Structures are given as C-alpha cells and as structure tokens.
Image (cartoon, rainbow over all chains, first blue to last red; front, top):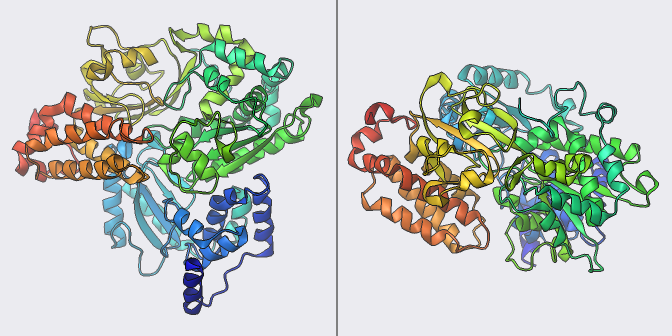
Length: 193
Length: 444
C-alpha cells in the first residue's frame, strides 16, 4: 500500500500520460516470453531500459509505477532495482548523457583531463546538466574500453582514443543534430532488445 | 607467431555472418559434438584442462560435472558477458568480431549440460553487442543449428540475450543470477552453489564468454590436443586485454608459454613501452589482482623469467607474485603515481560494492577516504598501516570476492611501493601541486 500512496501523489503532480505505444508494448510482451511462466519479473531490467528511452529519458516514479503494473509486481520492487543500477536515471538528464570513464587505464591515459575539459567547455560540473537540457556530464567507472583509452559513452555510442579536439568536434556535431535524430532512434527498442 | 585458435578467423571479411563463418569451418565442432553423448562432450572439456577464463580460473569441466542432473527441474546455462573488470575488454571484442563462435560454443555446452534454455547476460553498456548477438542467434535458428530439434537430433535449445544495467557486481555469478531474476545484484551466500540451486532455484552453470567460445576448438581438436598447448596446468590459449602505457594496446590471443617480457616488448603483442619510458608496474590480471613492480613482474623472486601462465604469475604467492585473473594486463610507466592509482581503484570498488556486507560497504569507503587524503597531501604516516589493517579486515570476511578484490590492490601497492606512500606524507606541498598524479620528476 505504501507504493500506492506514492503513486497517487505523483499522478496529482504529473499529468503526462505514461504509456508505451502499441508497437513497444508488443515488444515488451515478446521480451517477457523469453522467461519461464511465472518468472516475468526477469524482464524488469530490459523493460526499464526501454521505459527510460521511450518515456522521457529518465525513470520518474510514474514511469516506474507503470512498469510495475505491466509486470504485476509491487512498485517497491521496481524502485529498489532502478536505484541499484547506474544506467538507470532516477533524476531527469539531458538529451545526451556524456559518460566519461574515470577508472584505471582511462585515468592513467588522460580521462581526467577530458573530464576537466568538458567541465570547462560546458560550464557545468560532473553530475550536472546544461541549462538548455542538451548535455549531462557524468564521471563513470570502467566502461570496458581500456585498450582504446580514454573513452566515453554518449547514450549507447562509444567514443574512443579521445582528445580535446575530438571531444570538441563531437559536441558540435551533437548540438547541430539536436532535432535531426528522432527518426533514427525510433527503432531503438527493436535494435537493442 | 603464436598459434591462434580462438581468433584464427578474426580477420576474414564478413566472419560475423553465418555463411562466412560456416565457410571457414564454423559449426563443424557442433556437428561433431552432437554425434557424441553429452557426457562424452563434458569429458573432452575435462581432458582439455581448460580453466575458466573469467578470472577465478576454476577448471571448466569440473564445474560442469557439479551440475545436478538428478533434479527434475530444468537446467540453465548463463553466459557471463558482463565484462566489467577494469583492464579487461576481451569478451566484447570476441562477441563483436566472432558472434557465431560464441553461439556455437553455447550450443555445444548446453548440449553437454542437458540445458534447453540459455541466457547471455550482456553488460548494459554494451547494448551494441545485443543486436549483433540477436542477429547471430537468428541466423543459427534459420539454419537449424539452434531452436527446435537441432539438425534432427531431437535436441532443442533457445538462447536469449539479457541486458544488465551497469553494476560490476553482476559479474559475480550469484549476483548475476539475482539480476537475471529482475532483482538487485546482491550476491547469494554459498552453498548452495548455482550447480544445485541457481537461476529460479534450478541447477545452473555460469561461464564466461571466452570459456564458452573455447569449447569450440576443444571439441574440434579434442581435449587431449588442446591440453598440449600451453604449459603445465595453464592449457590452451588465453585472450589478454593489454592497455596502459604501451605502444600497441589491444586484445591478443597468447599460447600460455610466453614470458611477460616477450608479451610486453614484442611487436606481435604490446610493442614495448610508449615513448620508450621505463616500466614501473603492471597489473597483470584485471584491477583486482595485486600490482607488481617492474622487477617482480619480469622475473620471479627466484630470478626465473615470469611467464604468462596461471602458475608463474602466482609464483611467490602474494608476497612477490600476483594472478592471471581475467587477463586484463595494465602497464604503468615511470611517471605513474601508485598512490593516485590505488585511490582510483579503491573509489571504483567503493562505488561497486553492493552494500550487503559491512566490511566491504564500510571498508571500501574508509580506504577511499584515507587514500584520497594521502593523495592530496593531507595524509599521516600511520594512515599507511591503517590501510593495510582495513584491507586485512575486509579480505575473507564478505559473502562474495568483491571484498578481496578491493583489499588486494591496496595491500599490494603498500607492500611494493611503501616509499611512495611515505613520500606523499612527507612532502604535502609537492603532492598538492601535482596535477593528476605524475610523480617521477619529484622523486627521481
């Protein structure tokens, strides 16, 4: 019942409709079928990824409650998972999340300089989002790209052997892209799940 | 040139496609395996002596033999593609370039284990691999190597790809099982081991990507032939992820019979140190294993050449040796600051601790704070022994090995580079003014 209360309050504050399109919904059903009968909770992580992508870029309590209802589980079961995994954002983020690896080889090969450069360039600190809502800057732990250090990930894309020039060029490209790539992303769930 | 058995066909144009993979002998090991009984396949893997390639190095055939085959419950195979150990990037490379090699390995292994459902748990950050794997699975299905009644043998298998969401701990097998059940990645207390009670409380085997891919050449050439490659109990080939201050970072397949020096200096592998700078230290098997100074990584304490094998790297125990681990080989040049590097790794473990066990949850954060003040010139001399003390109190006192993995880098850094820690305490002014850790010009 605790979950219900949170649900109730949030829906008062936030009237945006939280619902997958029929196309995505059928994808979700397809994912659930990968797990044995009665084990549909296993689909939680993949569905949270899709929910985050499709329903506003982050997991608001309303989105998490919707996912709970889809899987017939308690909202708390979704909250505890969403807050455990670093790829799930429980706060709003920018359109592009710049995740710069700060661990081990990346740190030894200039990852910290890249972070500093981006902080100066964007005028924000790690963990913050630019006022235009375009970029969120994050320091992350090992991205598994040590042989191509320093690396960062922008949404699902890896960018490797970074230099400050490369980063500047990428920022320009993303700025100019800001309205153009919606069509490209519409098959996101199909492509990755 | 070293012998390549996993990556033999990696440069063939279009090898990620079914038809090209098949043309180069793909799926013939599966055809061979399906003519054997499942126990005979397991026997070949046992004979190969292959040790798990994820990091722990446990013999794969033996792990398989623990699977409870008397249970009436379904059995599961989970392919651990949650590659997250700092310094390690071989599995993503293998999947990206040779997805069908993994799929073939999964089918053979599932057949040996009597498994009809297999999950590939892919690290959340590697979403691009999911599309690659799904395509390979589709192609294998369409060609009757996967799905119902494979090649009319009556054996059926489904492989599903599952995505993690950014948690190092989910590389630990019981945490991975929890995560696959849609929960937080909290490791389980063992026993019961997954072989008896794993996914959905059913008998389960969790193996690393490279391990399962290596089953293909083991079946192709036979376990005994495979065991002839390498040295001693380090049979076969191993993928090494090489990174750091070297000329040729990348993934290399090595026969486990070459020396560390050859691996580091040869143009076939790392190609020597970048800018010709002297080597200071190496982390040989992923961030969790003890760091060794140059003289101990190149030669054992007895003065023998250190080899790229499980045994040789472990020679001397933790006093003077280390571990092959996941094969994440990070080389540091003379300008690297060991204190900063240790702080960096400890921050990682603190971030990745699941929080279940207090020695790990509290200890990693405590070590991180102490290392941070040392690195920033605010440390005290007794902080060094304090770190050793905390690390000892974490080691062995947690449910899963993450606690050990956090303790070992700290203990080994102090063991081998104590003077550098003391330098940080004695010279706060200098240390405070160094940007991002270069120390060489102040200490030499």
